[in-house]
Structures are given as C-alpha cells and as structure tokens.
Length: 420
Image 1 (cartoon, rainbow, N blue to C red):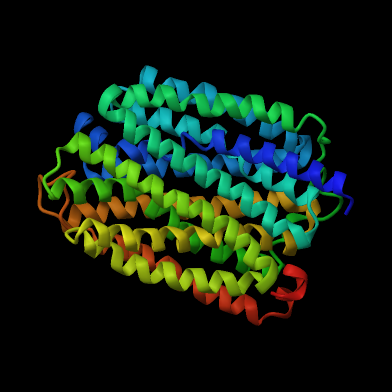
Image 2 (tube, rainbow, N blue to C red):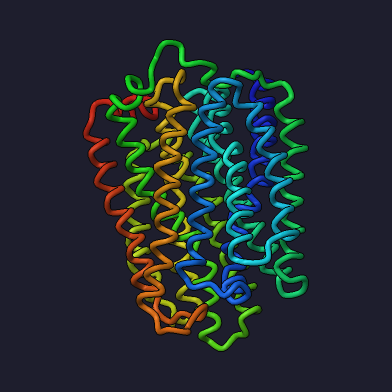
C-alpha cells in the first residue's frame, strides 16, 4: 500500500474513532451514579437494574432498526444522524429526569438513537479495510468506545461531588456534540453505500440463518454480552458499596467508585486494541477462547471480594476488565468475515438484538439476585455480591462451548486469512 493511502486511512480511522469516543460518553453514565439515584428515586436493586435493562433493550432495538436501515440508505448517513440525535437526547436527562419513571423513559430514549454509532461504524470499517487489517481497525474503533466509557466515568466521578449528578450529565453532553462535528468532517468523503447497499438477491434466511459459522459467532457473542454488559452495568455500584462498607460517605464512595471503574475501562481500551491485533496474527477463536477463560474465572471470583482490601479488588478488576472486553473486537471482526457483505447490516442487527438483549436480561437478573441475597434495607451498601457476579460467569462458560464448536468447523478457516 502506498504511504499516502495508508496515511489517509489512518486519518480516517482516527476521525471515526474520535466520533465513537464522544458518542459513547452517555453509555455508562447511569451506572456511574446508580447508588445516588437509587436513594434519590427510592429504587430497589431490581428497579435500578431495570433502567440498565431498558437501556440495553433500547440499544438493541436501535441496532436492529438502524443496522437494517443502513443496508438501504447508507451506513454513513445513519452514523451521522445518530451522533446528532445522541447529543440532543442526552441533554434531556439532566433537564427532565426527576423519578424512576422519567429516568427509565429518558435513558431508554438515548439508547434508541445511540446504536447508529456502533454497527453502521462497523459496516464502514468493513468496507474500508481488507481482512488482514480489519481486526486491528475494528479493535481501535471499539477501543475508542472504551475510552469514551472511561472518560464518562472519570468525569462523572470527579464532578458528582461538586456539581451533583445533573451537573456531571450536562458536561457529558459535550461528548456527543463533539462526535457530531468530528464525524461530519471525517466522513465527508465517504460514499453513502457502505457495505450492504442492498440485499442483492440474497435473503437473510439463506445467507445467515443457514450459515453455521455465523450462528456460532452470534451465539458466542450473545454469551459474551451477558457477561460483559452485566459487569459494566453494576461494577461502579459494586465498588461504591465496597468503599462505603469501608466507612466512606455515600457520595464520595459513588464518585470514587465511578473513577476507579474508569481505570478498568482504560484497560478495556488496551484490551480491545490488543485483542484485534492478536487475532489478526493468532486467529479469532484462539483469542476468544483465551479471553473467555480468564473473564469467566474473574466472574466467579470478583463479587466475593467486596470486603477484601481495595488493592486486591482493583487487581482482580483490572484483569477482569481486560479479559471481558478483549474478545469483543474479535467477535465483531470474525462476524464480518463469515457473513456475506450484502446482508451484513441485517445480520449485525440480528446479532445485536441477541447480544444486547442478553445484556439487558443480565442487568435485571443481577439486580434481582442482589435483592434476594442481601438483608432488607441494606441498599445501596450491599454486603453480598458474589452470587450476582457468579451468574455472569455462566456466560463465559457457554461462550467457550460455542467458540470451541466453531473452531472445529472447516468454515472457521474463513476468518483471519485461515488462522481461525
């Protein structure tokens, strides 16, 4: 590849990654302030988890509709629209959220428009980069989202103590505003058609639902999503509870918990970049199997450490964060390699519905288990977290099984230039 073309691709990738970073800032904002909202809005853990679940379901619906729409009107157009809509809806939360009901509606509204910054972005990347460079590019794209989550949590953790959660949310609104401006600049020369400009005679039933490799990649991704989305939804509250149980005041514990979770997301940034790069060299399923093994062990361990020294919690948490997200770009890259480009948007929509639907159920299930296994009236300083986190670990177990099955199929050679 000529140096000028490589430089142009690098600049384009930096632009779309910066846009994804800004658009990701609202994604974990609720998780960052969950302990405070649980008190302010008088919510049980199940009710608190239901807002996370509603967000995930709204996000899944957004991915389904906007991914399929991108096949027809263009991934670029959907990506640009979604960044602007995310900015507008995020601003409504500090302005109008006053209770559980209003919070549920407003957070879901953000989710319903935010999905257009994810799968349409993957479609744009799949068209721009050849298979031998695609894993690295998608890894950076997902790493940008991890950095957006980290910035969101860090900003919220710092500002919630001085400006309250509403003040923190006003500042977070600047992220999607920046994303709107950057994406308009970065994608100005990108053609509208992206990957799946039309079905072209290939039906989803034939091209996807009869494709064993694609179905197994989706199954593994679904179980991965159960684990990682449940973990991210509740980790800030878990750290806040651990700090509160050590004697810290709740607002300070919540702010510090969010800030420490931001450190985990920085590890996620490293993991997504490394995961994509390693999978280009060692193979998709090899990296997925390694990451799921480590994250599963962490899921069955992390929650039982709530009373352990903070340094122990953080050490395990960093490993957990790295492994739980490190296979995400690999699942996404492998999926683009086993699905026909003519139906990629629609296939990504189905995959997203399964994955984020599982994440929604995981968040709700986690909250229900917290309510069942903790003394009445202990919210949000719950002393027992092990059972809830352990349930997430079963996602890793079933994800390992589906990925091992995929690795045994000859179709897996279509990934990573034959490296499986």
